[in-house]
Length: 264
Image 1 (cartoon, rainbow, N blue to C red):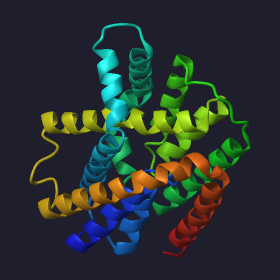
Image 2 (image 1 turned 60 degrees about the vertical axis):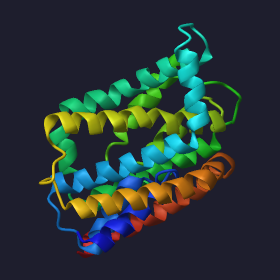
Image 3 (image 1 turned 90 degrees about the horizontal axis):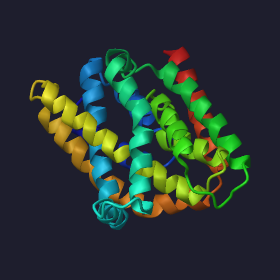
C-alpha cells in the first residue's frame, strides 16, 4: 500500500463510517481494487487506525453530548446521563468478548476476502430493508435493548456487515426512535475503538514494524478530515432518509463484489 492508496482508503473510511453501508467492507473492496497485498495483520492495523480517526471525528461532532454525559456521570446520581453511560458499557460486552477471544480469527477476515464482504453486504441490505418497514416510535433505548444492540455490534465486526446499519436496524426493529437509535449507535463505538487502540499499545501490536508509518499517518489524517465533513451532514441523512435507499446500495455493491470475486 502506497501513500496515495492510504489517502483514498482514508477518505472512503471517513465517508462510509457514518452511513449504514459498512466502512470495513468498503475498505476491503478498496484494498482489492487498489491491489493491496498487505498481510492480514497489517491490513487490520490500517483498518484500526482509520477507525480510530473517525472515532475522534465523532467525538468532535458529538462533543456537547459527551460533555453532558460526563458531567451527569460525575454527579454520582442515577440520572439520565448515568443510565445512558451504563447502557453504553452494557452494549460493549459482546464486542469485547469477541475481540478478546476471537482476535486471530477476526484478523484473518481482513485479508481481502471479497466474496465474504459481498455476502455480508447482502445481509446488511436485508437488515436495512426490514428496519425501514418497522414502525417508528418515540421509545428510548432500554438496558435489554442496549445488550441486544451490542450483540449486533459484535456481529458487525465481520467486514461487509455495517456496524451502524446493524445497530441502528436492530434498535429500530426493537421499537426505538430512529434519531435516538442513530445517536446511540454513533456514541457506543467510541469506547470500543479507544479500548482496541489501548490494548494494542499495551500488547506492542502497534509499532513502527506493524506497517508503513507514513501510510498509517496519511490514512489517519484523511479519514479524520473526511469523517468531520461527513459526520456533520451525513448523520442528518441517516436520520431522515429511508433506510431502504441504503439497502438498495448495499445490494448492488454486494452483488458487484460477489461478481468481482468470482471473476478473479
